[in-house]
Image 1: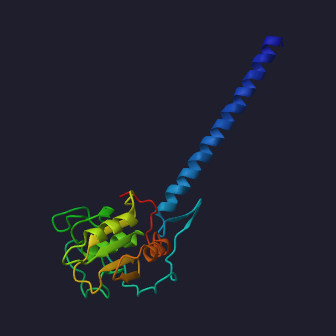
Image 2: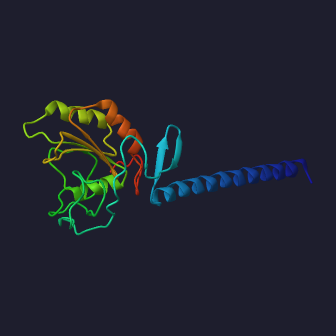
Image 3: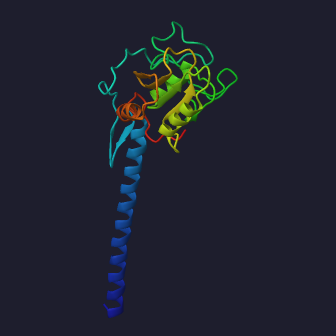
Amino acid sequence: MTKGAIRAQRRARSEGRKRRKRMLWFALAILVAAAFIASLLVPGGLRSQGNLTTRSAINTGGPVAILPDEGRDHVEAGQPASGGFKTKPATSGPHWQTLPTAAAPDGSPARWGAYDHALPDEVLIHNLEHGGIGLHYSCPEGCADLIEQLKGIMGRNPSQFIVSPYPGMDRKIAITSWRHLLYLDEFDEAKIREFVDAYQDRAPESVPQNQF
């Protein structure tokens, strides 16, 4: 075999090894991506903690007592859940599942963010089921400063937060998560952030960083 043929043979073997290595890395990347996507489809989702990602579970402890589980049934959009709810606002129970319609203009779950109108419990519950936090206020005479403070808790990224009025509460402020409720008479950032840290993305269908 000539020297040229030997060099060509070596080049062919080298190229073969490179192709096999590229194929291996490509297959590995596909497996990692598939595992991540599959994890988002599992009830409970994922929960981000610093640089770690762990499976979410309902937090039965934390700063407030866990409330009774009122279920997760779906009811017809636009129709109130029969029997009502045990708390105002509700933190679990029958809820709607729909895109925006005439009967449910905001859809269910509603898009994350701040609203200047009240959302039905049947909508809010669905957002809580996805790991969200509700920041609600009852101010018959107005409370612009409080609304801005609650929006400050939400920050620039509204993902996993709903800020909205909730008329008819006995207290001025209600902070909600799945099966947890914190009432306040005045804004208390430390208590609210403690609640958020304990219960955000700790729900049956949590999808952390859900941008919907």
